[in-house]
Length: 181
Image (tube, rainbow, N blue to C red; front, side, top):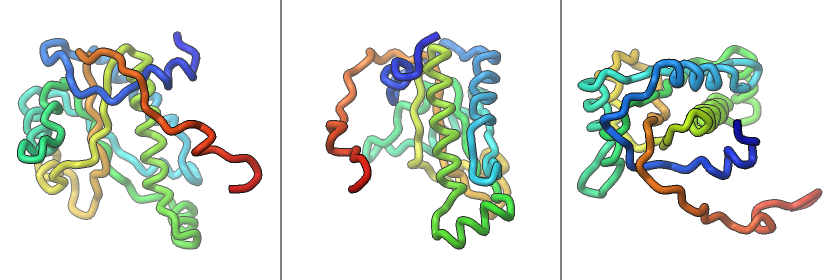
């Protein structure tokens, strides 16, 4: 088990996977447990996860995420698992808070649970990538997502074939201050 800073430092957005190595169901279940315990505004838990691991359906979902013309997400077909994140309705308290504060707490909450998913995947020895660019209507039809619900993310998982790379980040002094901006 890694300490958290090491885990967070090791995690990267992987864009190359071993398409012939399936992800064990036990690992998927532990990742989903981590996702479901993520905090959310007023404990609203405004998410639903659709695990897509059927090879044919997964390839159709992957086709809906890729755009070869601009080179977007063409790697997604290699990943053996897609976790599609659907936004669910917030509870009354979180919804009211979102309206009063003009902040979409459900989207913030989905971001938090997505972080849990990719960090749990890293802890399981898996690579991952969060995809926000996809044909939402096509994915909706493929997965039977009811009209009116938003599909916010597709998180791909698998055994990465990419080497670890150094993170390029702004210096902490550029992004952190104490007590004033």
